[in-house]
Length: 371
Ligand SMILES: Cc1ncc(COP(=O)(O)O)c(C=O)c1O
Image (cartoon, rainbow, N blue to C red; front, side, top):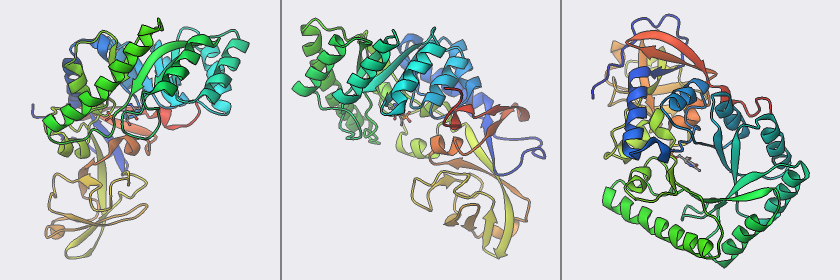
């Protein structure tokens, strides 16, 4: 489907400005639902948008389960009406007490968290049972990403047994995030995803064989969830995050996906220091710098421009077309990695049918809301 990325009047948009095009945003939401096959299988991650209004759109579309990585995101989701929130993060230190505070403040929300070590599990159990509360705990499995999680071995089995036995915590299943499965070739990606899945379901069999409940396996990101979605497994929940906005990094990596980069950054030329060079107000404080310099964005109107310098507040481009640009001229840029880019903005401008329709606060970019 072709979308127009026109903005009729940009005068009230300060640059750099994060703009979200509403029609492709809605299309991405529908595409995510279509791939999942059934809205009940989705547990989308909210880290990409961190915006209450987008979570409300997802709730209105029938999504009743969410994933997040921070307490601020969890609270943003609760305020949007979510009642089943998986904080897919290992709680340590004061975050253990914070989880008690969260379940006390949001008694209608079922909060789930991950664990991969007996020490914080014991602390969580003591804190929850001491407060007369319960929390669902998923065992984090290492899918091969080697970031967090345990291999599916005897020690992991013992840890799950502790979740079953301890007071204040209830066994809530397994977490399998395979962010390493970024193969562009779909067959290669599928093979890698299914190897991880096989390990997880064999491990689940060992747990259920002991009579322990394993109500869910939460799996996947953008590249792998369409592959998980092909499986017929009642406990499987799909947790993509990036599809809402999508970005140029995933568009290049996953040509099999039909999501559209719906979020762009409006930048203005601030200088043309040489005949072949322009400088825009789009530094690393306005567009994420986690891909290497030179590849941090796509500029559809200047595809051949070389990104030769990227400082905190400046983006310098070398292009034969520089002389066409004067200070004040505008460009729309697609970030390579949208998730950390969104978090650089207080609010986003929403463009609907070419008009500035509204603005939404990126409320969960803050580390603390009220809990
Ligand atoms: C634990 C976890 N789940 C889900 C996701 C969503 O993955 P993606 O950004 O590929 O949609 C992420 C992304 O970082 C993640 O860390």
